Image (cartoon, rainbow, N blue to C red; front, top):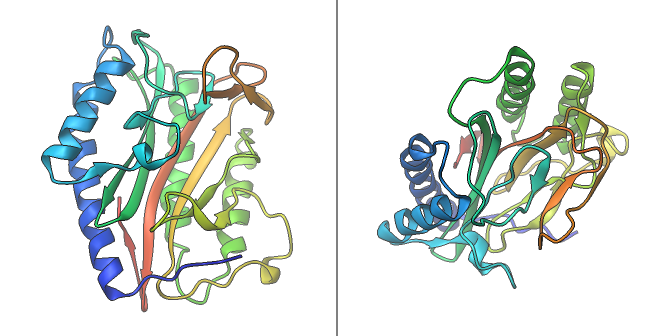
Length: 251
């Protein structure tokens, strides 16, 4: 495992990139409504990022030419934009990254398009959001990464949801996906997991489903992964940096 701990200058640049990403998300999300195509969302996102002097992170990935991933309902991750139009009640994930000073930041959120959604869907989404917020409080120097993984697993499975184990959080910085993996479940004793050090930058990313934890590639849709039983899926993600005794949410 090759973990790139960031120096003060790199952390400064990542904070700047994170601020750009936050601004873009805050401007973009309120514009999304039924009848829009996911291509329209993607084009708007790219314009907003470039207008702020940055570049889309995801376009740095070989073979991926879009700014966002925009999964709907049973689609889990990596779904590229298309001509598909959103319907009222669709559950949409907006996954987006910014590349600034040759460093990445990454963010994702899931919400119901055009309405609040029924109580079952609301509870499903709120649990992921709340669990991520609580998990981020545990990211600090000297803590084991497994503490965060175990907490996420207990919270999500305890609520009756299913972690998609093949899909994980990750280190972030010079590459969009760096070491270490940030699992949403505990795969070994906590003390055998990575001990967090100052300079660590990671994207904590909770990816889960209502049905089973099984996934598959979506037929005839390049990149896209879906739940095998086509149950509802969601993703919540923040990029976070550990600087000395402090931890910062970058985006």
